[in-house]
Figure 1 (cartoon, rainbow, N blue to C red):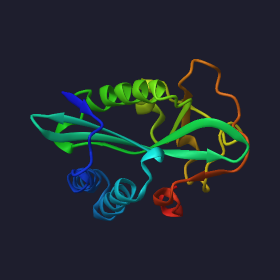
Figure 2: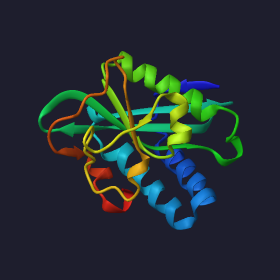
Figure 3: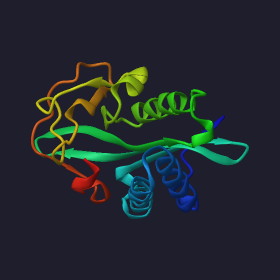
Length: 179
């Protein structure tokens, strides 16, 4: 397994992998939604607000994790949200997602990111250090449909203390249907 941050020129391949994976697990409507989100993130998000990590096997993309910046009006800390992440359907269950996330979180830490959050399955993401949190700790940019899936972690080793101010996300994530 090889991990990389080189995604330029492979945007469609990555988006297609997300669309196929989410179609297989959640249905065609979700596959279309997430494939479109990935395209918009990869093409329309400023480089400074985006970190993309891909897992390749024999040259093929078998997984990807996309992090984009969250801004808190009253807080200078660097915060990124993982959304979305996928491992190709035929490759799930082999630890690719866990290993990819460990690699990505280490790279984010090295890049000076202080806090990582995501909106997903606490059991899966708990394997790499994400813990449930309330919106008193980290307000979400839009109303959460499933607040139990709002999870995060400090990447500095310091306690995760409340983030101050209203939160905004990148344009691609600023859609109520995603939350």
